[in-house]
Length: 304
Length: 236
Image 1: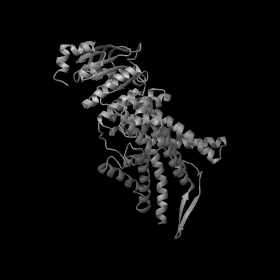
Image 2: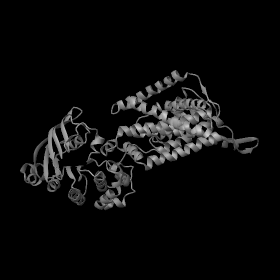
Image 3: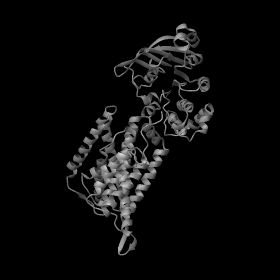
Image 4: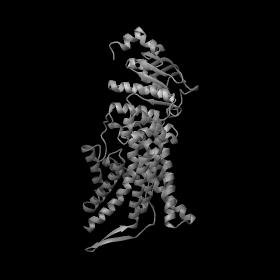
């Protein structure tokens, strides 16, 4: 029981990070029907920008943790969003209106490019960060097994909840969110009502990259290491989360993220640590076979 | 107010418009009639810049808008209720209207909303309902209402009567006349329902295979023998 609870806490933490990344996949898919395979690498870039920001702030002598984190959060989101914007501008916009496969291939190319770009600039070795937020609360002690809830875990889940609420309000209540949904539902009509569709799509990439930046930052702080290849696996898992939740659906991405985090962690905790990735991708296969629209997704066909 | 001059438009290699000239004056209702596939909807969409005219010019308010981006054209005083209504299906009626108001000043929103609810009271009671769940007639009303939310000086309407019951068709045409009288908006509408359209319009054009073949006042065209034979008798 205690062990299970511990695994649930860990799974929820990991799932929050997957959820943050999955939103970027699902929103881009919703609007332009494309899987942005470079999104996992944008997340990785977010992690690297965070580690650079930590060093810069350390040199400047800003060491009060809440202030430093706030600065890094803002800087990380801004610079990662810039990467997202450039990727869209360079690799996807010129291909709009062409064959559906073209931007997909371009995305894979962009993914390879980003990995090599970071590898060249930052080196291929792991970058480590000493723990900034350590310690935790002992929730309970059962038969000698102490269930611990780390402060970092609280920060991750709390930050994710705040961002998800904010983001949901942005999409459902603001004019920008309405324009994004309009582009998703009928792009041509959106043009006809005066929506600058290109700008809206670019902003979608920027927002997705911003959330991925937060995921990159907390990933770095949680695991303490990052390398140029981390975006690959995390990206594909987040993509699996988006598909499980129903690609194109925002609440689906959040739900899918948490479920994938739990599956991943519970499998590793109860069965085999070597095969937890296999378990996650088995979920992807099963969902694609038996419920391609995902848990909260909507069927493709619309009443006209 | 709107001049279309020698416009050619292509869909791939198919020439949908083959040199079209149209002149719509301020405050008029002008109807464009013609058979299915004559290029009527293409003309309206070409005015909006999607698809673009390959040749010729579209002039609105004295400005050449032929090459301007669609969203800019739609923010310069033109609104379009296009073919198939294109209501956002997973947005509420209110959100659809908010989307229509994008090109208008935000401070006008409440006033304009009351105005379109005055024209279409049914929409008021359906405010929170999703667009995709409305009936065909309600969707058509919403499409016109949404277009009106931008306070257009030129309103383009594509087949406002398509697929509607005769009673509702009459109602919609009455409302189009009211809009023209009350807001002084210029209206350019495309119709297969030639009888109603020509009765309503000050002037009309007939389009055949991507070309304008006849023009005249509504009365003249209604009385014209060729028009009667092709579009009125045996038809609706």
